[in-house]
Image (cartoon, rainbow, N blue to C red):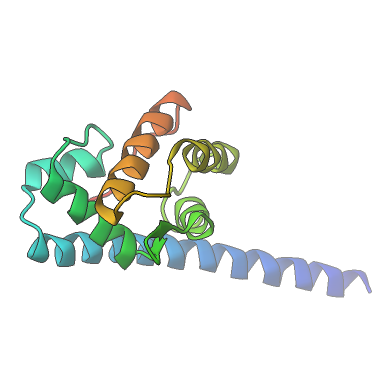
Length: 150
């Protein structure tokens, strides 16, 4: 019986690691694709996009706000004009952060969920508010910097 438990454990470990590698790779690919597709619709400079990728700063600009709304929708983090917090948790914890502490990323999502009002706000402004909260909270919680260009 003990060998079977060991085999099940090893199989679970391999599948879990494969899922993390697959998702990290495809999460980055999805992000790059969303950035590219939304940049074809909304004229945003590479400098601003790089600032967002590196969690530096998000300027208060209407075209950028709508670009963010487009990116959120493409990544499945905005549905029906509302932030889909469950998808945001999944994308942040599994498909995006690699070596981040999942408790901190969960806390970041919970803080932003509480701080970002979703009622009576258009998709562009909503995405901007969520992104600003994400960057601010990411830094406050001491989450690791990562290069999203990889």
